[in-house]
Image (cartoon, rainbow over all chains, first blue to last red; front, side, top):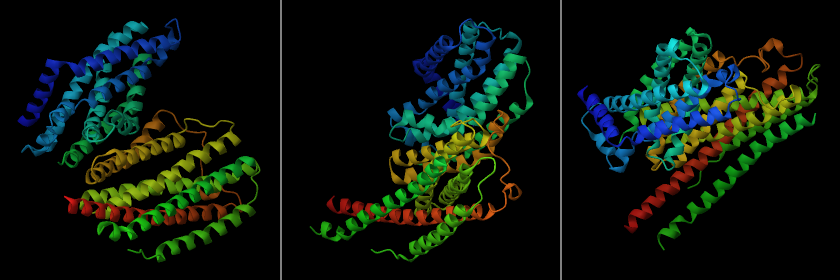
Amino acid sequence: MSALLAILWKDLVSEWRSRDRLVAMGVFALLVVIVLYLAAPPGGGPEARAHVPGLLWVAWSFAGVLGLNRAFASELENEALSVLALAPVDRGFVFLGKALASFVLLLLVQAASALAFALAFDLDLRPVAGRLAGVAALGAAGLCTLGTLFSAIAVRTQYREVMLPLLLLPLLVPVLLGAVRATQALLLEGTLPWPALQLLLVTDGVFAIVSFLCFEVVLDE
Amino acid sequence: MSYALAAYAIAVGGIAAYAAWLAGQRRALERELRSEPLRNHG
Amino acid sequence: MTQSTSLPRLTAAALGVSALLWAFFVWRAPIDAMQGPIQKILYIHVPCVVGAYLGFFLTAGASGVYLWRRGERADRFAAAAAEVGVLFCTLVLLTGPIWAKGTWGRWWTWDLRLTLTLLLYLIYVSYLLLRSFTEGSERAARFSAVYAVVGVLLIPLNYWAIDLAGGRTVHPENLGRGSLGAGMGAPFALGMLTAVAAFAHLLVRRLEVGALRAERERLDAEALRREA
């Protein structure tokens, strides 16, 4: 358990010192907001707003992938991947530490970009803020669990930056569809549809368990 | 009607092409492996 | 090192017989009242779907066996099944839109089945790319096995998700026995049989190639060691 906190702490502290992942993710999300705003039908009316849920998740998932790509970067650069594998700790905790670190970073970026979206598309998010945060967190959880597993895989491949989205995105469809559906209902109608939430929760559960179990196999050095 | 023919042609053609490619690979590999002992004693 | 050639001959023979019967019955099949002759694409499109999913499940199964036992043969089987499966999946995605264009006038829709098949295709391709680009063959085996197993677990989730997003209708449903008109049962069933036979034959040939490659790698590694 303390290993989990240790890894989480190490990742977050090193991130805070360099802030490279955070800045990259943040700037990227912001750029996506700007581009999508420019691409949306002008006038910012209800037609443009109808697209916001999808666009929001495009921005969030791309930023998430960007961050996950760098999840094992410092270990790779310092040839410390085998250190992670050989540490006398349950590999599951290594996984959780890494996944949680990415999760925290993604949540921060999600919050900032949600704000940017609200400003760009003239939305009032206050009535749904809490629930939106919940949906965002559920989606981010799915992204970060499976994403950390595949990041560990991708880091050992030849075209790692391309490999991660290639591996991750097709499998992320349940998370994205559920999250977009929930966000859509939330932003456009103010309700939270149970079927979509159900899908998200089940998928997150499956992802978490599967990633946790498979991480062992993947980090074998 | 031509659509149907096109579809059949593509499907059967695709399978046949793959089989042919596999056969080519097999022959090349067999040839390589047969000449292997000569290579290693050279 | 010569392989026994009896199994490929067997599968080739089975394929040949099945294909001939199938072709005969397709030729003789009645022309659909509503769609016209293009409906006969059914007898090649659905068999390809069978091949695609067969490959996917075989790959996932072999991957599971590999993760359990770490045997090289399971890994080679998974690789071969994936390659043959992706061929069939490509054919599905080629014949399907041809049929669609001919009947509904559109190449593509985001219907449940089409989307699911497209996702399957992407997972297949990712699997094969992962195998190619991973450094080290033992690692490639491990990684791709994990990916295949995770991928297969996702099928029900993907189905649920796309259904939730409203991707139903459009695609001709009801491929149950009753909906096929008279005279369509035989070519349909034979098509499925031929697909399985074709898959088996291609798989056997591909496994041969895989074994040969493994042998060559082994010899190369030995040669390298001797030079060192």
